[in-house]
Structures are given as structure tokens and as C-alpha cells.
Image (cartoon, rainbow, N blue to C red; front, side, top):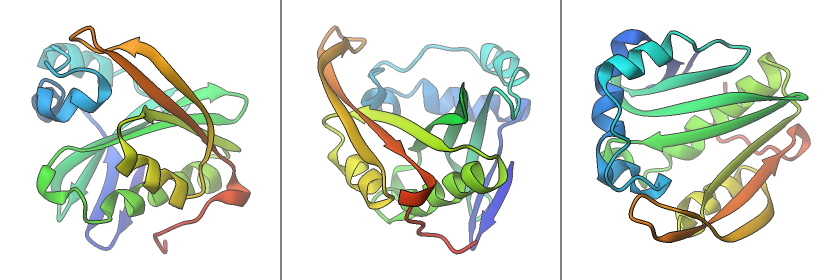
Length: 177
């Protein structure tokens, strides 16, 4: 996948990105919202090996570039039955809260619906992440359920999550591709 819009690029992660991904994924400040306040503890070699298994048909890790500089990551996973599950992290905090997540998600979602033929996109987020929930709802995602105290983070603290789904007819794009 290679998507471009103005100064934004979304591209497939490759083995050479493992060093950047290990820096992000092992940073507890970046990963806390996903339940890993101590980071995920993977090595560069483990991530590189995992990236070799990415395919368009199964799952794909993606790198977000802003002005050609890596600033975050996205992913999608084929859940079967024309359903994709997605995720996003803008890892460079200086690019957060600038409306870029909405545009980047628009780029990915449009590609998944239009080019790849998915008919539904799902995701979940921490109930405390109200910023993300606002963005998802602006894009047209519908809240399916809230799962109270459904999982524990690395520190053993109970967390709640929100499940969302999006259909092509409900999608509101914030990028003109």
C-alpha cells in the first residue's frame, strides 16, 4: 500500500522499519493507551521477522510519514467476510491534536473500501480515549458496545474498551484523494 495526500504518506512497513517500530513499541508513554505502559518488550529482530509475514490478504503494518519523516504507524487485519480491523498511532507527539489522524484514517479507510473491497471496518479503543472516539464518530463509525472492565493492562489495572464499526455508506472522508 502506498497512499499520498499533501505532505502525508502511508506506506507498507518493511524490515528496515523494525528499528523505528521497536523504539515506538517499547516506549511506555506511546503504548500506554494500548495497555502497555512499560512498552511491549519486543526486539528489533522479532519485529523484523514478523514484518516478513505481512501480506495484503492477511494483515499489514503501515508507516505514517509526515514530510517524508516517520511519525507513526497504522495497521489493518483481514477478519474474513470482507471485514477489516484497523488501528492507528501517531507516535510523534508533536503531530498529535492537529487533525492529522482524521485525514490519515480517511486515506486508509477509503483504500480499504474502494481499492481492497472491504464492506465493513471495525476497531476498538480504550474507553478513556475520548479524543479517538470523537474522531471515529466524525468519520462515521457507529458505537457497537462498551466492554466495562474487560481487560487488564500490564500493571494489572482493569480497563474498559469501546467497539466500533463502519460501513461504506456511513463513511465521512476528511481527505480528497
